Amino acid sequence: MSIYLNNAATSWPKPHIVPQAMYDFMVNSGANLARGTAAKRDLGTMDLVLNCRELLAEFFHSYEDADPRYVTFTSNITESLNIVLKGYLKPGMKVLTSSMEHNASMRPLRRLEQKGVHITVLPCDMEGVLSLRDLDKVLKEDSFDLMIITHASNVCGTVQDISGIARLCREAGVPLVVDSAQTAGVLPIHVSDLGLAALCFTGHKGLMGPQGTGGIIWKPDFAEKVEWFIEGGTGSFSHLELQPDSMPDKFEAGTPNLPGIAGLRAALQWLVKEGPEKIHARETQLGLRFIEGVKKIPGVILAGKQTMEGRLPVFPLNFTGRDHAIVAAELVERAGIETRPGLHCAPVAHKTLGTDGMGGALRISIGYFNTEKDIDCCLETLASILSEPLKA
Ligand SMILES: Cc1ncc(COP(=O)(O)O)c(C=O)c1O
Image (tube, rainbow, N blue to C red; front, side):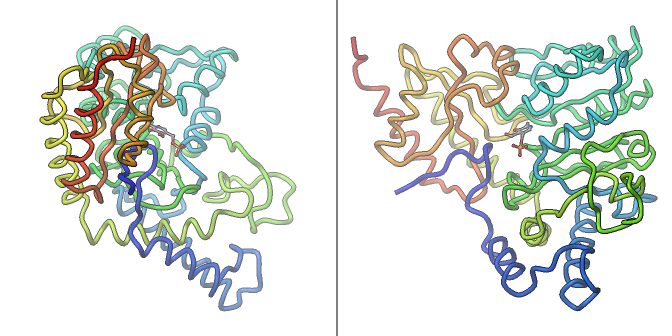
């Protein structure tokens, strides 16, 4: 028996049409992109990739003047963030971020800092919320070249007021980049209304696609200012020994993950049909069942928000007198319950929540395919573990 409660790491299971589309691509088609003779199979691959770009541009409400060329495919959001941050920020530039970021942006930022980029990390409160008042103040006191923020925390599920943050950045003329790893596919993200410079996404979490997929939705004039990260063959402009400047080739050297793109396209089709609102409502309902239950168990310490308001169903737990990693191992052993202990690649977020001194937390993250039975089993198993006497 297995109960999967680690959806913040990657969503599982996937809708059946996702692996089916990947299998179909590999068995029945399988041609490379723009590296053939324009035979039927080559055209099929071109059609797949263009159609997936179109679906992504539509799904995230990209800019009207942005054709699908301004959708870049990457292998994951980590690559997307590296492309944007390392391609845009130059020594002497100033960047704003928050104290709830994942290492996917914090590590490139700290590397850039060593090269002379100035980083300001705005502290969030104990619930992981960035205060708009603090942001407004800092934007008025200094000038910045970029702001990068995660839409929702992978540690505690706190969702930032992205509309408010985007408004303040627009007023201050600061390009805003959003890490949507935890929200894409679950919460609406309107790239053009928000005026984002770049939306970075990963395919394998809320978007329900396969691992190894991700991307960037660009504001066209921002994309022009970003330098390419990887250079090589693009299947186009082969007479040039330099990387072409034109989109989408500029950021897509090398053969893309075509089976992954086939799976991601199927996942997007499934998402549009199912409806992200329905998915979010269901996950919130299960989250409510969990949070109400877990707060009644003696010895549980829940960090971050204490209700379901303004959050995703991602819960960081610690336990009086017990190591959370041992509890995590017990959950697997007793009932096959899969969670994730530790720091979740976000040490700065744990510092903000006050859980860094405990080595992080046991993270329970609920997904669309979980059931009430899964939640109840997890609560019962937790209660049973915690009711046992502490070992001396
Ligand atoms: C907020 C956030 N950003 C970035 C990432 C990195 O995602 P990936 O490993 O798909 O690049 C994650 C993954 O957990 C995340 O939760």
